Structures are given as structure tokens and as C-alpha cells.
Image (tube, rainbow, N blue to C red; front, side, top):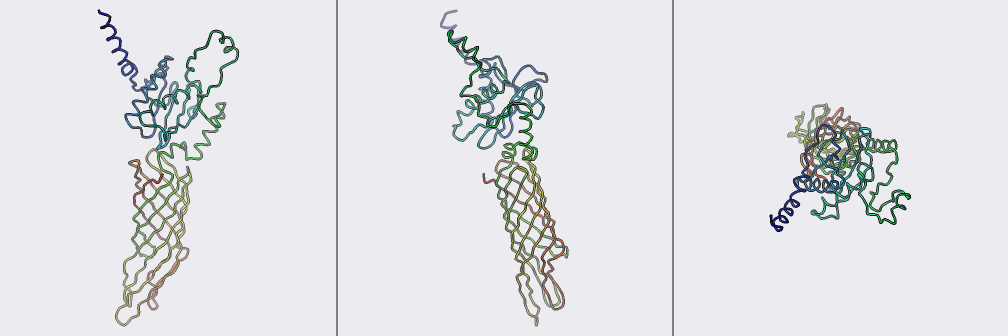
Length: 363
């Protein structure tokens, strides 16, 4: 075969080899020495493929292959993606199930899209080396310096990941990670932050039912803050009730107010549940529309409700949250409208409120 044809064939083989020999499939059910890669969060398909290919190329020089799989056998790395960063966590075979050997946050903000896979694969390699999950890359050493290198021990390199406060022992690492989960409802802080935004603005339709039989319909605008297990919200709301027949005409009640809720919250990949205490302060309007010969009345009074709130969130897409809330409150400060000797528009007893609406993240 002419030399030119042989060179062309060799070039073609070199060009297609990375995409064929290093194509990454799911991990086998037995440990074959691969590095298992687990991706969490939402990854664009193109970035996922490029990252796995780049990582396979980086590790191929040391005879290590890469596959997609869950944590279990062997060694591996988990990459959790949020809007602004990726957190890299690695494990080894002998580690307890809930222990990550090392971790690093990788900032995505200043990198162009076409450089993400390359830069992220190099960061993953550094963390794997730092945790001794894979062997460090071979370094060229001059013959006259070989003896010095062997006796001086492995030097610290500038490329080692900055894992501030990283535990030196498995026991310390387990304690740090347990504290991280305890502060975030059993979910790592960055996973919770990715699954649900810290700030949320919601618009809700609401209906109230008082134990005396009165009903009101209205709406609320609510601002929520989520900090791991802790959640709080403030809202403004307005509701109006229908007219009720009385001896001398009809009577109605409406209210305008605000609420403060404090509670706890647990989040999953695309859902969250929470509950806590809620306090509502209102300016309540009582009004009477008289029949002929009677006198109209109107009064504004302060009312106060205290009770409990439960909340369910579902996040079907990144920028939208479906929300349902139920409040059950006692009327601490109530009011009533009078029609002669009869009391109408009673705001007392127990009030139940149901809300349904949509929320959008603010961060």
C-alpha cells in the first residue's frame, strides 16, 4: 500500500477513535474498575455528552474508563448542577454509603458554553486525583532530579482543588456531610438550592370559610424565603364575602390584610412540602345595605387570626412552581356587624383558608 494511503488511513483511525472507543454507556452490575459518573440536576444533552467524552479522554492516559451509573460498586464521581455552579463529589469503594471523599464547587458564571465541558472535565480529574480515587497524572522528571523527588515526597501542586475545611479523615468527613444534610432537610445544600430557589414570588387565589358559615373569596401576593429546613413568607391579601339577608336588609364583610408564616420545609428533585405557624392581621370592613326605612352602616375593625399552615409545591419546569396551601386558624380578635339586636357578619371561631396558585423564582 502506498505510504500516502497508509498515512491517510492512520489519520482517519485517529480521528474517529475517541468518539467510538471512548463512547460512554451505562455501568455494568459488577465492578470493572471504571469511574462511575452520576449526573444530578438538569444537564443540556450536548453538554452531558461532551463532558463524558472529555473526561474519558483525560482518564484514558491512565488506563481508566468512564461509565454512567448510580453510586454503589467501585469508585465514582457525582456532579450536581445548578444555575451558577456545579458541585463535584467523589467516593471510593471502602467509603460508607453516605460519605463523599472530597468535594469542590465549580463556578460556571465566567465560562463560555463551548469551554464548559473541557474545563469541568479537568476540574473533575483534579478532585479524583486529590482524593486518590485515581492515580495522579505522570510527570516528566529530569534524571538528575529523580532521587530528590523520590525522597522528598509528593509535592503540593497549584492545581489541587480548593476544598476549604475539607476533612482529613473519613470520620471528620462524615460529620461534616451529616451537618450539611441536617441543615437542609436531608438534602445537600446545593441540591436543595438547585431543586427550589431561595426566593419565590407567588400569586394565589384563595377562599375562606368561617365556622359561623360566612365565606369569602379573594387573592394573595406572597414572597417566600427558603433556607434549607427553614422557610418563611409574607403576603398581602384581600377577600370579599357575599351579601347575607338580615331583618332590615343585607349585610356583607370583606377584609384586607397581611400574613407572616414561619416553618420547616423538605425538598426533593421537583417537589417540596412544608408546614408551620401563620399569623394574619386584617382590616375588616362590615357593611349593611338597608331595606326601606332602615339605616345603613359601615365599620372598619381590626381582626387577628393565629394558626397553622401546610404547603405543597411541584416544580414541573425550572422557572415555574405550582403551589397549594391550607391554613387552619383561630380568630384571636374578631368582629361582628349588628342589625338591631341581631348579630350578622360574625368574624369569630375558626377560619379555614385554601390557596392555589403559581410561583416564579427570583434568583
